[in-house]
Amino acid sequence: MDSLIFSLNSTMPVFIVMVLGYILSQIGFLSDEFINIGNKLVFKVTLPVLLFTQMASIDIYSDFDSRYVFFCAFTTSVSFFGIWILAHIFIKNKKIIGEFVQASYRSSAAILGAAYITNIYGNAGMLPLMMIGSVPLFNIYAVLVLTLESPQQVKDGQLKKRLLNAFVNILKNPIIDSIALGLVSSALRLKFPVLVNKSMSSVASMTTPLSLIAIGGSFSAKNMFRSIKYTTVVSTIKLLVLPAIFLPIAVKLGFTDQKLVALMVMLGGCSTPTCYVMAQNMGHEGTLSSGAVVMTTLFSTVTLTFWIFIARVLGYII
Image 1 (cartoon, rainbow, N blue to C red):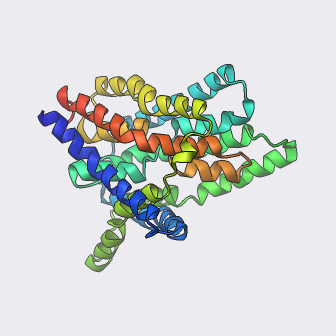
Image 2: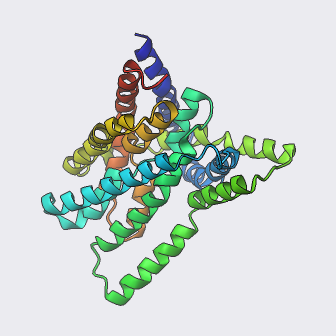
Image 3: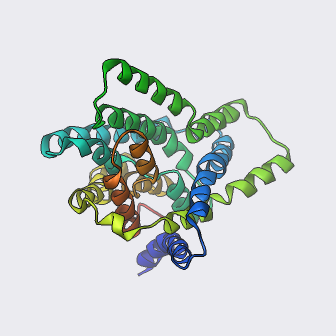
């Protein structure tokens, strides 16, 4: 019973805040404009500040775990290429492969990862290390598959131009930039005045509640039922298959507590809302992406509670 209560206390507060966002949206208290601005504020301001402060606070010379970072990168890569190969084998409608692959492997590791881990441990813990190994690859692989699997007919010259633009956009990604700057700050052991630290802490503290309210406010049940067949397959892979394959390996390698929870979010968290935005901007319809985001967001609370409960019962999370 203690393990069940611990699991519910870890996930339900996150779910309740998302429900609050949905209710406020349905009664007209939150407008679409507010939700869009909220998502943009989190992505471009509060989340980068949170990640920078967390990365800068790490003693990179003693706390950096290269083995853990490599495992996150390895797992992300195996998941991506494995799903891509299988999608080509089993999916007849080749136009949806790009969206299918992206939504199946790419988690909302930054936003929901911060929410879950902070809720359990009071700080972001091992989230920055997990993100070093996964988030840059999440973005790079998404650009790769969406570009190469675009339903639009692309000439060789255009393809090269789009790949170049994609590379530039990756370098300009605020999440990747904040992680890099945080690592530089940690490596140089930079110290900021109390005034600056408190200001950054205040901005960073807005990330979790604002992002959860925005996710709940943007929830649309009708999107979940579009392309329901493929959406269900994506959700099953994202929430159940990937964690079932890689979490036992992580435990065998000795990753427990905060490191294991971070991996649970990376592997079994909901598909990031960015999937839909990126898919549409790169010539895809976006229907499968939006449906996958909605379905995985809805059911990830249940599945993450399950994974946390199992790990807690087995003694891998304290």
